[in-house]
Amino acid sequence: MSITQLNTLKPAEGSTHAKRRVGRGIGSGLGKTSGRGHKGQKSRTGGFHKVGFEGGQMPLQRRLPKRGFSTLDGHLYAQVRLSDLQSLPVEEIDVQVLKQAGVVGTQVRYVKVFKSGELSRKVALKGIGATAGARASIEAAGGSIA
Image 1: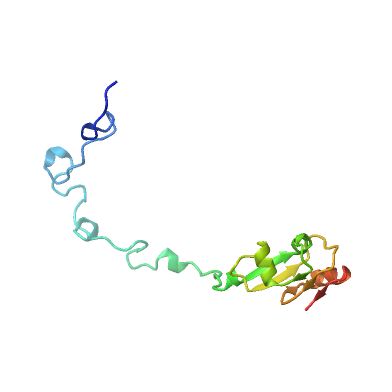
Image 2: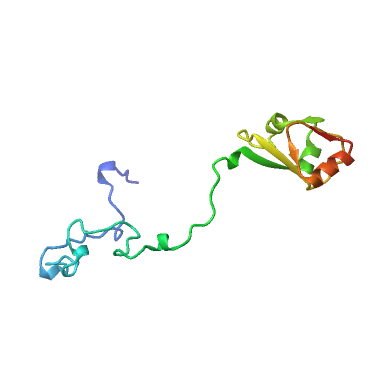
């Protein structure tokens, strides 16, 4: 068993090839114009333009209409199901309780309950909104929304 030294490491046979040497004569196939053709912006040094540039024509990303937006305070709002409230052990529920239970994220400030799932126990919501269907289900179970 031979021990390989760091100073003797070499790439595997056939995994590397010689770098293309442009502008080194006619025999290389890339002499004279070095594979750039004749004249024009792209043949010259520094002769490249920004990505998406179409020679002065209105570029594609500006021809297409803008659509939608990403709200900056989207992470402040959260929605909670009735079934999530059912699984919580406490009766009085506010945003802080939901955060501690891991139902909503830590950045959330505003919570709204929507009707999804069943609620069979009494809960009191404080500082939390509810849709009309969720409100009806909560009040039918004997709960309240403040």
